[in-house]
Length: 259
Image: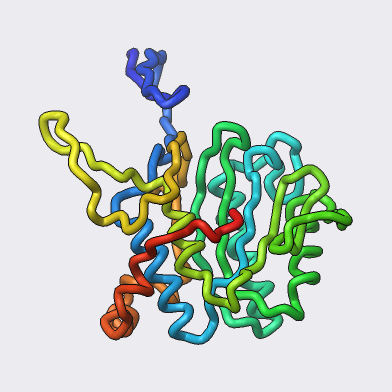
């Protein structure tokens, strides 16, 4: 008996005939962030600030490059699986040191750097060096100490596989970082009959992404997320957001961002 299986190649879905009964094990695929993603990330950052531990640290990891280099925990793993492992390792690292845990993250594709991860967390100054050294261990790429580097760059790797940047605005950059992370959400939505409309759920379009194929897990697209304690979907957090002025949730200008 001949049945058909599907596979994804360069964004297209191909129908491949196969002989016999086969098990097709596919992952969820996305090209852009879903509608409302940027708002969720921004609101999570607002909640973190309300809880007293603002998102003030941005870690960027070139997951595709590290996988190709067979480096660290990204060796011999699918990027989605490696990201899941990394997020849990970071959470446990924070918990062990008593650092308040607040996290937002987003997977993105860049034309030059390929797939990469942005992760925003709250980090106190006394742990920055230890965190950077630990990131070198997790990724398998050594930390370097160049004489000249941007002021916000507090952790750099030898081959640009990872970068840690700190907030330059007295711990008040969480919402801006979140807005930047959400740039891959389309500014326009495709409606019925091929019509396009403005995506009114996207709060800022100053930065925009170009999209790109990202493979998730077998169950979900696994493209972005927040730690549970600051998730905007939790009722207590929704009530807290009702007290926040729109200025904190609707960002007008991201020109200051070094990212």
